[in-house]
Image: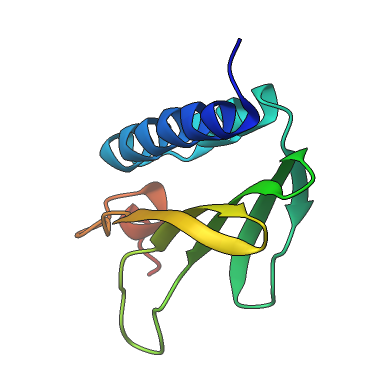
Length: 123
């Protein structure tokens, strides 16, 4: 049987792998699914300028995992920049962060968008 510390380490490794996979696929859904499967509690931490989700898991008093996901569009007037998505995973024991992992991806900008709205012409 695994100790609580070993269990926290296992979850940390699985979620780190899941984050890497999400960054390669440019889709955060699998990280969410994996966190919820381990029993993390999800909280919406979105702001007016960014979409954010926080996942918390207390394994036992003193052993805590936290995963945050944030996505925001840094574009401004007359500029189109990629949407930025970032993950941060931390493991804390006795209120001290002992391990942290970060990764992220930028969603590609659709250059020369040829959607129906660009094909319409008004005479």
